[in-house]
Image (tube, rainbow, N blue to C red):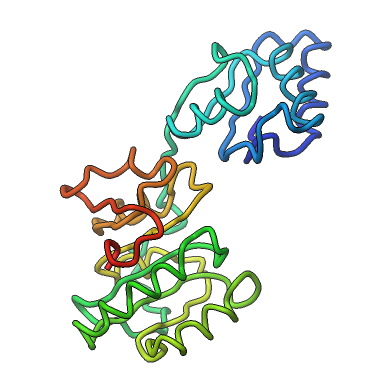
Length: 243
């Protein structure tokens, strides 16, 4: 069962019960994000915990951070838990075909990017505050914000960029099927997340394209970066450190 965040889709637990009743001899659930609260505060979480403990043979988490959160907050039997870090497939990301379809212009040596949803937890506002200083030191630098063209916090972020005087150095890019072209064009990839970052997939995608990364010490991201070797780690919500 690939269940995304915990507890995720309740239909998964119906299938867990059916599998157990049908005599399935080995069942595992993959969990990819944190429990939203401690199980003692939620009747649904308590029911889900009981089903997990009675029907599953393994629960796979994608980072040690998530593993520990499951121990602390889910109430599932720790003996069920295993950590297997995410891998990354470049089959649908590689820019080896060099199609050149990307219309955005990048500044060689001065292109920094953030890739992902424009939700507040991803830390775009902290990044914008940091970018105000970076831009003052390197006026030619550009910050490429790769995310959905609508929804989430985009309107607020556009207004914030304007109020900080960095609008001319921020470039907005819609999600593209060939994200590899963007990774190849960037010089640095940044992930200033504030919470609920169980792994940090964009970091390993960036590394797969040989790009250095800067990330906050949140969730599973410190497990991916050897600080000062293949990237840098900074405290979350700290624009000065990030800049």
